[in-house]
Structures are given as structure tokens and as C-alpha cells.
Length: 266
Image 1 (cartoon, rainbow, N blue to C red):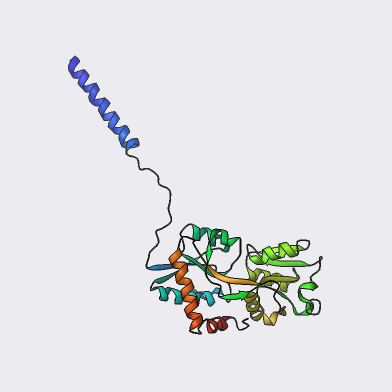
Image 2: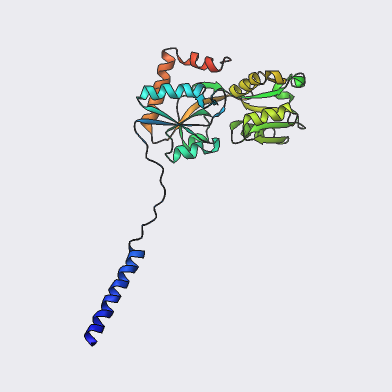
């Protein structure tokens, strides 16, 4: 009886250990989520589709100058194209996190951005421009030098335009909008005196709202250059982007592509 009791206790102990091991020893280890691996046959292009005429949506289709560039660049590389829509502030983090391969979204090439990413050759000279109400045309006839301290100035968040306005007109009341179209509505309704943003976008917004009594000031407040952002370690893609732009320029295709979307080229 003692022997049977002893073996019965041993078996109970073993079974208990097996149950505990089943619950704890074999439990799946939680892994950190990783970005999906890139596909060498796909070009993942980061875009923020709120910047007409550079990149925006018509219905469900992504169009604009950058969209045309992206389609041709993907074809040049022999890859299929995947647009990845992102908020503007998420573009560079997504690039650095390998969730996209390239930013083709009207990005200005700046010294601070070059600390984190590499830029292709610039394809367009741009700058900051102001949109005002028609009734204020005489008020701003001196352009940049007409801006006074008691004015309310609009800009778009996280852009070089917002940085410029904060730096140059920090003594004024500054209103930052999530999108340029929100800024236009505020201008039309008299909530701001002017909207400062990238020149191509200001010209497009002026055309889009020509019946709503707004007009651009046809002078650049700054000199900026648009380019494509690429991870610094992706040397081959950077080289390909520059070679592609050189070929477009050499074959005299670059300027017609730009003029299709931005008639007022420099």
C-alpha cells in the first residue's frame, strides 16, 4: 500500500508539472511588431494628398506633379508603384522606419531635414507666397513689406511656411491650420488677413477659389527647392533618382511635366 501511495504521489506531481509547463513554459513569447518587409519589386512612395497641384486626390485617384513623377520613376526602375498615404508630420518617421522607400510629396530641401535624410537633386525652385482677399490688394501692394504687426497670418502646420511665419512675423497673431483649404476658408471668412504657404499650392488655391474674391501676391517671400527624400543608407535608390531626373532634363521632358501642373514656372 505504501508503494502504491508513493507512486501515485509521483505521478500526480509529474502531471502537475506538465500542466504548469503547458501554461507557462510553452506560452508564446510576445514579439515586437516590425514594419512589413520591403519588396524589391515595389516602390513605396510616401505622399500627403493635401497639396495640390503637387499631390492630391481627384475622387479616389492620386494625381498631381509628384504622382506623375512617381509613376514614371517606378516604370524607370522596373517596379510596381505603391502610394502610401501619410500625414505630413509622419513622412520622415515612416521613411526612417522603412515603411516607405521615398517621399515624393512636395518636400522642401532644408538643412535640418538633411541631418536625417538624403535628398535627390532638386527638380523645382519654389518659395513661400501669400494669398489675400481681393479687397486688400492695395493694402498689400508693397508685398512682404506691407505686413504689419497687428495682422493675423495663417500657415499650415509642420511646414516650412509655418517656420517662416514664426521666424519673420512672430509678433503677429499666427494661426496654424491642418490643411491649406482650412486656411483658405478662414481667409474668405475674414478670420485671417493672409495665408502663407508654398507658391505652387497658393497659385492652385487662388485658381480653385477665383469666384470667392481671393488673389495671390505674385512675389516669393523665400527661395526654396523641392526634392525627394530617401534614407541615407539607400545609396542605390538615391543614385537612380538623380539619374532619372537628369534623363528627364536631358530629354527636355522635365519642364513640360512641371508646366502641366504649374503654368507659372520659374
